[in-house]
Image (cartoon, rainbow, N blue to C red; front, side, top):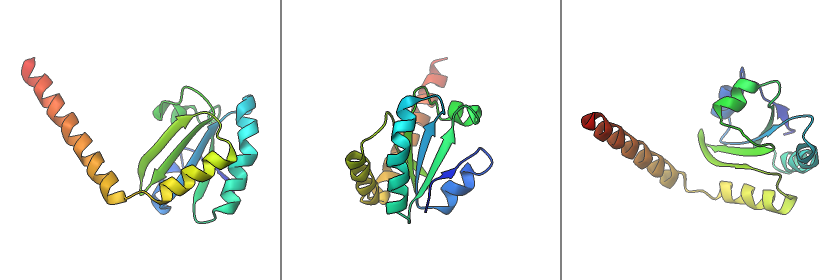
Length: 133
């Protein structure tokens, strides 16, 4: 599967319809983004079972803001609808391949349990803060 442009209109369906989604937040004026683009495209062609999308931060400012993108390129990865990786900076091809392998190897039951624990801890924290007020 080749890399596709992702917009606010189709992001939710892309994440919902694909087990693994790699997103590249980029801009035309960004030199490192242009250097990373062929590496990202090659990975998309080598891994047709993974959705690879590019989000132009200039055209999709609301998405960039929603995901708190402060530096580009930023690579974000979803697996099973959960963000499992988010990091600014262009990765060389070998590191991107390692990341792909790592994401494929995740124990998603364990990831979901960790997310649940984090949500419960945040709720407990909010309740404790509310009691103090």
